[in-house]
Length: 266
Image 1 (tube, helix red, strand yellow):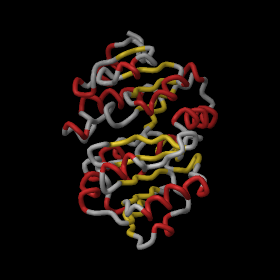
Image 2: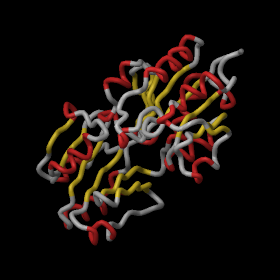
Image 3: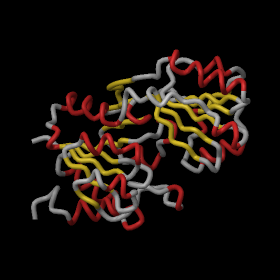
Image 4: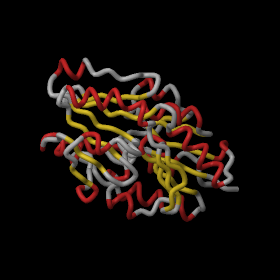
């Protein structure tokens, strides 16, 4: 019987905001045990490919759901790819030009930077942005095609709050400290990507598991067979879990894998 376990990255496997930028050895050991037992292991993250660290790649996960579900890889081959409709982005791009906003557009494996200063680059580096994927452009029109996700940074608080984003078409995670909008299309999510992966691997939804902690994980938690929420998650997210494990700082993933009796027969 085939089974799959998917893992969010930030707040689940690592915690860059609190200095943990690699998967702990305890968690790696637990993940290796799952692989040896025949489980498929996937990453399911809002991160674009250019934020996937060498540490995570070195573990050799079976696949990746990236850009909040818009880009899916299985055994290093593209399983699905859903760029945002360019017509839907025209207003955001127009506003960015008019308000002198910085913009980073993420495609499959590239990051196109327009009007970006070092402060924003440093912010991205705090999440392990990989410089080898960067390409600078002189005109925002040069980054209109095949976009999976956008970072748009306003220059002041007023422009940040005036940012006009169609909530029916986009999901926006906002960082108020940096006046930053992180923008995804709403049509494709981690949950829609999950269904694509289950179909490809011929796995029943009841044989699927997901560890997550963020607001953008809620659709996946509701779609997965067995939703497992990190102890460091908000109560709003925890309400969508079948199980609550310990926090990322307590190696919650490893602890749950080894002690829940859910994955291995005792």
